[in-house]
Length: 292
Length: 284
Image (cartoon, rainbow over all chains, first blue to last red; front, side, top):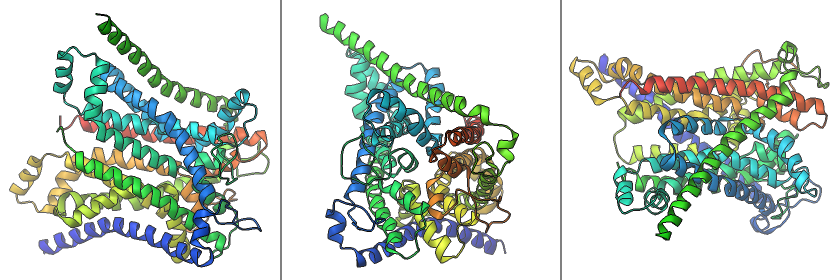
């Protein structure tokens, strides 16, 4: 009797664990299914080479490049803000800051990541864009610059927290050996601690990039809805994610080609984040517990 | 001698730079919350919370969106909490090390990195269309449950791992079965950590906008949902809708609704941190 009960419980728990596999299979098959049907109507060559994305207009073009350039542009701006600031914070907190300061500041910075992204969108559109327009009068009301900057602020804690964990895990002996040779804290940080923690730092950066390209609400609110192949940060653009939101808000018929475009766009986004996640997972696996 | 001085000088310079970066982060947080408070605090009154949506900004309230958010929060908890904890128990206590558990692990780590909007596409096709749930609270909650499942699993595994093996051995020595050990010893011992993870993941679910827009949650819903199959809106979508309108009154409304949303998010984070601190002391 007891054995039977234990067996049933184990099977129930196993089922829950298998749900996670079902989710992955679900995501891949849903995206693939609709994308295959999309490519029955649109040539795959056009999809990758056409420089216009206008599925919602009468003159329809299905080139993903403008959406990709928009995604790339906002993410690049975000990373160029978050990377130097996030890394400096992590090195400062781990190598210089007093213990108590570190203990209070780290959770406060992590609050930045807990704020819902639609709130950052508000901030980008209502505060940052008007402020930047005061400096660059030619800046459009919707642009990738303020969306990217604000996204950068949002992902600072992804880089600072995970990198700081990695730096903090480096044993004291390494630092003391370096100090013993007469090195300053700065020299020790950059020549000893950061190289030793490099795998953790790289993981944090990859996660931040993956987060930036999948970020939706900031760009949907502040970057505009005009897909265009440009690297100019002052004009309205559209990212993959913002396009999916735009179509979802409209009245698009299920089964129409417009409906399928969001899955084709979605699978492109999924492919990028999947590659990034896989790289970061293998780095984590390979270098885990090097110093434990 | 001068080289040493230059190095010391560089060291001090970096220290100042590090403090500046850290403070930039914190100052932005303050500016940000301060600005939203200035924009919205005057707009919050009882009517704002109890009024239905309206085309006139001064009459509009967040009642239906707030109720929608509470419904989503409740259903997501009911779905994701037991499933996530059960999956974590299996992985930590039952699964044998091997190819199968390695696949499960890689898979969960990958799911945690899938952008939330992709979960929206999954929910749209599977829950809304195939299962025919429509753009209902239930479809939205199922979608968000899948989204936060990896977070709950990872947090639960961490806290189960932290329970010392001596506890397991003592329980087995007294003749307890595997499940009795898990239910009576391991879960109570790791409950603080599990709760922290669950609350943090739920606070993320409350702030999610994109997957619910894709699933078809509406910006304008005249009534609060009465059952799981009703259509719904949530606070973040209401905010998004108000931000996209030109009239200044709606911007003020958006700021006011953001204050309420942040209050909920920060409170949940506060409770989570409280449990984490309380729990961390136990095994040290």
